[in-house]
Length: 215
Image (cartoon, rainbow, N blue to C red):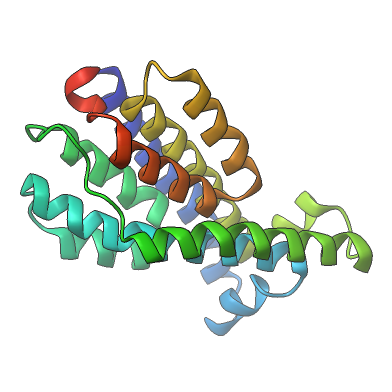
């Protein structure tokens, strides 16, 4: 029960956080394209945008596989909602729905090529873009992430998605502190790489925490 509540609460917080900034962006009178340009304006902003894009490239096919394995209905709604509302809103909602289903003992394995590619790309892209930020004297990193409502919305989206990944790691490997701490530290550097790590590890060598560690 606590994890179900945590996923639901996170979805609500992510909705409030992202859409507070989305509405502010809409009310600013700037064109819709400005939402994209603001999130690619600096290396700092681009590092967040690329990380969340890579996470979606991994999570979307995994969600489809997991929905088929556990017979979760409406997967198209989760994917469309992730793209139009916020992935940090719909992913925890999906995880809540997942916990209501009987667990088959293992989570769906993410597509191997995608998982490996996202893991590598997340680390490389984050390293390159953060290095570019350091050498370009753009300004304080977090100031840039919240410089505009559009940029702040994506920053909040990624932060909430990071927390969803940590909660998922706890659910799947609740007794394995090494894996959980590894997921947390890796995700702090690259959220997409952190997801690639925990989904691969959990699907390879551990029964689903949904049955082993009931919430």
